[in-house]
Image 1 (cartoon, rainbow, N blue to C red):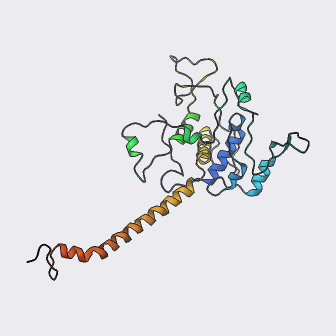
Image 2 (tube, rainbow, N blue to C red; image 1 turned 90 degrees about the vertical axis):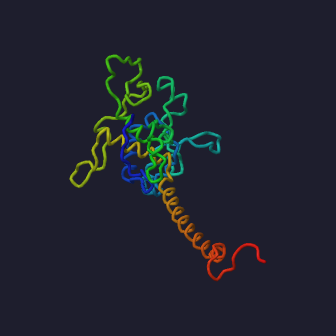
Image 3 (cartoon, rainbow, N blue to C red; image 1 turned 120 degrees about the horizontal axis):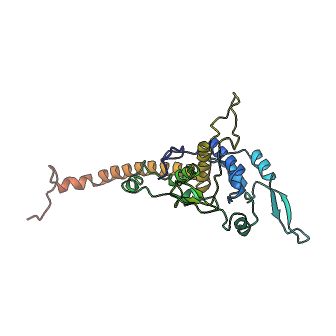
Length: 270
């Protein structure tokens, strides 16, 4: 079973780590985008609660890509530099081309992968996971992190078919994707001492890309949690006011019903 990790966005009050999302996008761009597609516009990389790149950074990033557009006045398709409103382009022209280059099956789209993948925790954890303030909704990112760290040499009694790779966390333990990450593969931002701000290791790369995929699957997570917290406060105050109003309105009638001194007794008179 994948190990449960600690994430900044976990829990009721969790939020995305902007620096981690920026690193995760770098891992996607330099490693994962060679095969996998993400259907998100460049402009979403600037939004609050996300990677929060500046408008100038995103404009420059988009311009590095060539986007097919058209038709022009002559009826021809043409290529132009990307714009912030464009979707991040895929390496392949279509799924058939992607499948032909990857052993007959196109690599899965990653935009909602953190929500599409997960695992069963079993009893009693599936009950604990739904308790308010203890809700565990990070099955997908825990699975992605473990999967990227799960490549090992197959046990001697386990036969891996040709074209497959052994991964202890993948269902069936045979995965078609070669190990995508290795230590030192992606250069991270350096601190004042010239050293990377976080380790350039498979474990760190996998954490960052998993967090980025969680954001791409649920980009409004921070806003949703903030709104939910505000709604809970409102409902608490509203419930208290309704209880107070109920006591004020019904208190006199409650006194008569209990036959308190100075009130008329209930029942027939004669």
